[in-house]
Amino acid sequence: MTIVRFYESVPDEKLKFAVIIARKDGKWIFCRHKARDTYEIPGGHREPGEAIEETARRELYEETGALQYTLNPVCVYSVTAPDNFDGQETFGKLFFAAVETLEGELHSEIGSILQTENLPDRWTYPEIQPKLLAEAQRRGIYSPKEQLEVQS
Image (cartoon, rainbow, N blue to C red):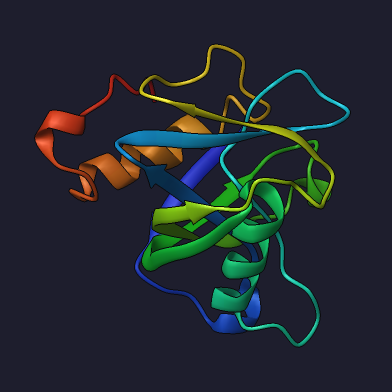
């Protein structure tokens, strides 16, 4: 069973991931890894010596081609899953990006991006990422007219 928890903060050294909920022109931005046929919220691992906001900015660019955007922190989250990190609780920081400009070409492991008004049907991380969206929604990150049905 996968458990997702939310925190206001944890010690910086515990943050291993950055995940970025991104929107452009009223649409959500999801990405698809070249080796998969499922979609996910942009994000990834923190590199040694990298500030977590730098991780978020790097991953957002690598996975969506975002060039101009406003980035804001939402909260800290953790995931505990028996098939990840030997069942240890791992921490990440959730961000929200209002994207203004996307580069025309992707330069990473991402095969494509999806800009949509709806959530994807096939998630890469179905036990985690819909819960991140639900928490951002609960915290009022987007206005009521943008509310989505997010199953948690």
